[in-house]
Image (cartoon, rainbow, N blue to C red; front, top):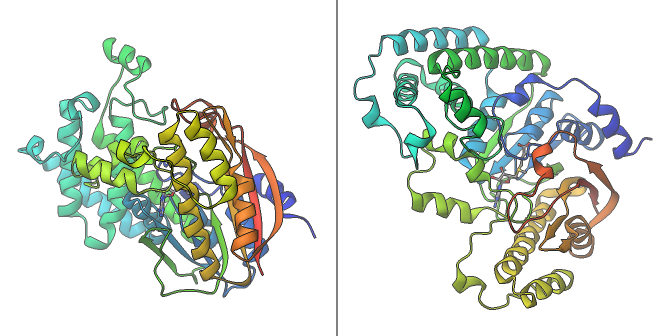
Length: 415
Ligand SMILES: C[S@@+](CC[C@H](N)C(=O)[O-])C[C@H]1O[C@@H](n2cnc3c(N)ncnc32)[C@H](O)[C@@H]1O
């Protein structure tokens, strides 16, 4: 029998389902990872697959494609919307009909009062031209007016997928930024932005992707996606055969920052306070006030305390707390995994080690150590899986988090 690593290499060469590209999302898994895991460890049609940090739904899309029931949770409402939409819509004729109604109404809308209806968005005029704001509002309000209720989510997600391309934020960049490239194009009048046309093209290609996906999937599986905290999951399910996850990295990925424009327009960030409260909720957050990190925080996890002790004594007090809380949070997630995974079930994790202010944090080893020593798992495989697509992750992202060269895969089995 081939190992997970060998099967993964084979799966990487397979074509990718187009539905995966429905919406940009930071830190997406490569689909070959959940695909391989489901093939190897959820081989019966009754097996249930879970991703407690489902993000844009890569695990769910692959599990459904292989006919498995699956459950996804994420703390970010954008993740929930995107995951649901990718795994829900089948009827391309109906979607095309709804799109026709929507475009008809949007083109007849004269844009009156549109500026007043624009959602909360910090520095809105920096990010969008006036006519773009007006047209985005027109599309948004006509989705609510012209589209029948069950299809609105699909078109909300399409409008969200259009957002970056019509903004002043360079779609090539992970974090929003009005790049030199775009500024130069704008100065030379070389950038034509047409919200209606961009939206319609995006919607049509996504309807085709949904149609292809529907034909690819056996139609027997149930998909459940909910907003929930992976540290304390709902208690109405258990006996999961397989969990596949890539949790956030320590401090280094600011999900809200990378997707704030889309989230403003979906009404998911309603004020600056709401945004910072949401930012604090995620595992791996570095949003701590000085009152919180002034004193050393001991986790009781010996290997973690050794690291945070060094950080604290180097004066990196905030980082020491960030690292400590990260591992404490992941302990809670691991306890939840031990609760919901059935005996002999599997847990597949993709994670990266980090360099935090010249101190290397061996996250993969620490996870493996904790899961085997405290949570009743056996380690079947651990190997490094060099980055394939996420070139942006190779650069230094902020003053604290260092370079990450490689992802690690952990394959574990519950005893
Ligand atoms: C690396 S991303 C997962 C990406 C996903 N596998 C995909 O392919 O799109 C990590 C996710 O964890 C989510 N997250 C952070 N803290 C969380 C928490 N406490 N509970 C649930 N999800 C959380 C983030 O919102 C983010 O979507």
